[in-house]
Image (cartoon, rainbow, N blue to C red; front, side, top):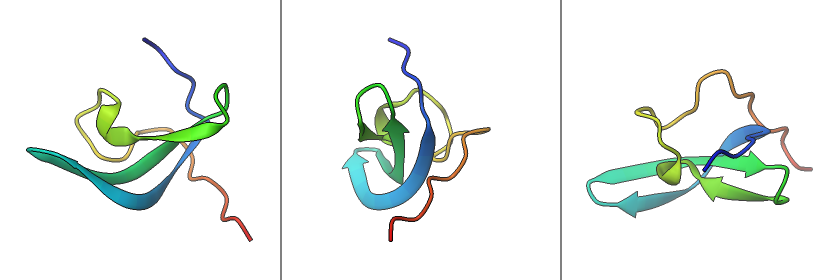
Length: 56
């Protein structure tokens, strides 16, 4: 399944042994975040995806 990732940010760490990842991807089509641990990519942070703006 492909999803559109609008931005990413650090958040709560999620562990699915042997992996741990504290990066989260914002999915604008769904209006929410998913942990990057479930996105098929070898690095914790996704390349070429901007950081999400800080909420005030």
